[in-house]
Amino acid sequence: MGIFEILSLVCGLALFLYGMDVMGTGLKKSAGRKLKTILGNLTSSKLKGFLLGLGVTAIIQSSSATTVMVVGFVNSGTMLLSQAISVIMGANVGTAVTAWLTALNGIEGGADATAWLNYLKPDAWMPILALIGICFIMFSKKDKQKDLGSILMGFAVLMVGMSLMSDAVSGLKNDPNFTQILTLFNNPILGVLAGTLLTAIVQSSSASIGILQALSVTGAISFGSAIPIVLGQNIGTCVTAMISSISANKNGKRTAVAHLLFNVIGVTFWLCMYYLVGWILQTVGVFNIFDLANGTTIDMFGIAIVHTIFKLLAVGLMWPFTKLLEKLACAIVKGDDKKGDEYTAMLDERLLDTPSVAIENSRQVACRMAELSIGSLRKSITLFDKYDPKLAQELRDAEDKVDIYEDVLGSYLVKLSARSLSETDSIDATKLLHMIGDLERISDHSVNIVESAEEIQDKNISFSDAALSELTVMKGAVDEILAITEEAFVNTDFDKAAMVEPLEQVIDFLRDQIKLRHTIRLQKSLCSIELGFILSDILTNLERVSDHCSNVAGCLIEMSQHETLDIHNYLHEVKAGGADYQEKYDAYMQKYSLPQSK
Image 1 (cartoon, rainbow, N blue to C red):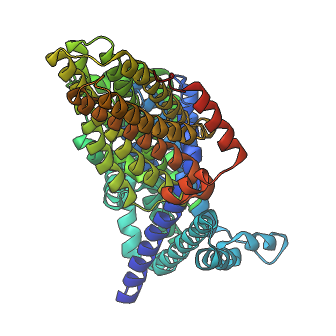
Image 2 (tube, rainbow, N blue to C red):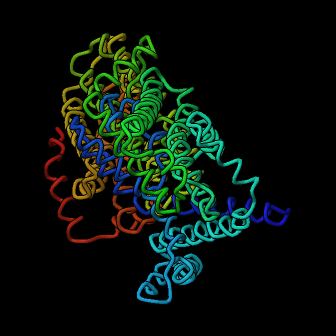
């Protein structure tokens, strides 16, 4: 090979890897919602786990990415180790799809009845895909079409890279030195090592298979050389997951080890079976399988076939022994993890490469945050009826936990927003970032209310009967708006969210009226200024809580309808009128009417 052929080979490899990355990114964005649905349907069934791994890998075109994702799931507690093993098996089979796609470059049609096969070659239709892809990327305003454009362009670039590599090495077919080097890989140990190292370097079994397919156009690679290399490539693909698991917990590390064991055991067993059966057939004089394998050249489709058959055989071998594989992984990675917060553990940074899944986990943490903060506020209101120091401390502890959730979740969402996101995922991330601030403020107000209740308890003072009856109405309205907001947020219920703003306006009215009534009682010397300050603090906190509920509900509705974040304009539009809004407002005004003043 001359310098120009070497540069062409390197260029082809670069285009191949870049095309695979672009195509994978586009597929992840396009299939993001489907990934969340598939994950949500995962059960303890081994078959469903296998199909999950196969489907996701076929979608994103990378078993390494799927396995790293699975390590993240196990590390975050989203998936059990037993489930992960069956998913890994499916991922190993799913990655064979790429080998069949790249094998299209090896189609050869003659001038006779097989001439139609030439139309299946990428050279015939790849320019059309590239043209469609670049038009979608440059001229389309819709994210889905842009993602489709990225997939088509990535696939086109991948195929161009494959073609460049094939052309660069085609001249080696007449090079005796190259042929002599390849015969070394007839040695199974050298072949497995070569496949393992190549895959470990390029960090992708699909890419290393593509390189081997490109070399096969020289006609110098035999089945005997290719089989050990292909098997070694399956071991090399474990490197990415092993590196990713370094910072994982014990179960995360066990997942990566299980992936390695699956491939090492599969390679060792079937390679030994290949040589054992070959030796037996040779000994009994049936035929020499080794001479046949070493004397028969392999093409691109042959490599894809060997690759696929081995993966199916490996799954067939290990399928009955998944429990044993799990125990072996646990025996290698000993010990237990320190107990931590199950929700913050869900925010695993490995999942950032799969934004839709990372956002779903973020949403679950935000739901837990909403449950804590809203629950704390509703409990804090009860302290005015009966003060409980244990409950007061529980509410302070809950507020500290909510603060931690906000810090961890906010940082995670900022990192996620820096990734390449689809429009929908970007909106979801922005929405969560906006709302967790309101949820955190609600928990702050719960502590403020606790302090007001403690002040009343320490000073041994009490409100007048009129003030208490008015506060009861206010507390009832706030309790309802909190319950509606929590249900709307957790269940993404837009009908419930639409009920928040009318009630928030009623709470504003109640605050103003209760303050006015208190001023009148002060003038009549029916209440003290000291109690007035406490009452004002309570009313202010309750009214601001309703404001934060309004922000959360408004964010949910406005973004679902307009897909932009302009809460103030949205709330202005809502308050401007509408029969439905007015009907809800009137109903709440009647439900939470203040008792008649005496």
